[in-house]
Image (tube, rainbow, N blue to C red; front, top):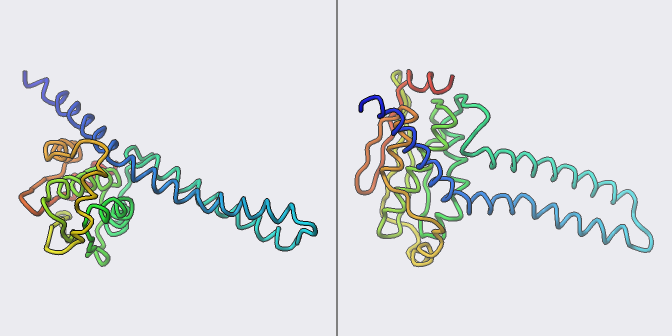
Length: 229
């Protein structure tokens, strides 16, 4: 029976990754649309100028360069978003930038659900594997806000020590209560449970601690090095 435990844990982690992916799809779709919209607007403007009686070739050249730049940026954004749950590498990345990226991805949904975000990780120099931050941290953020009964302020903090890194997400009084009712209608898939987050944490070697109003992630240096390859 004990030989089946690793297999069972991996299946639970796979199920949790699927649940997280389903919850992230609306946010990913929103961000993709945001990166593609400027291309559509620039293309429409370029088409109108080409059809003018006396096209301004110099201006058309500038518009074409701008369109190329927007296209490259949109392509890079699309690749990054599509690889959100399955990055090509699991190299260590700065905690501060990874947290900012996750919060940026979820910002629209969180605000429409009545949550305001306070990110206190800007000065943290620690690094953690990209996959862990994109999976365990983001799932913790969603599960914590899913379990909240009222609008609140989401405070994210981190500390880096010789033995590892600690990430904490806490709910504090605040937020935008006028949007809370709307948030319930925005959830397009089931809420994330702590069992989902625990399965992801086990897969990434993260010690998970949670209670009403907060979640804490402890990642030791050894686990981070092993996960980062």
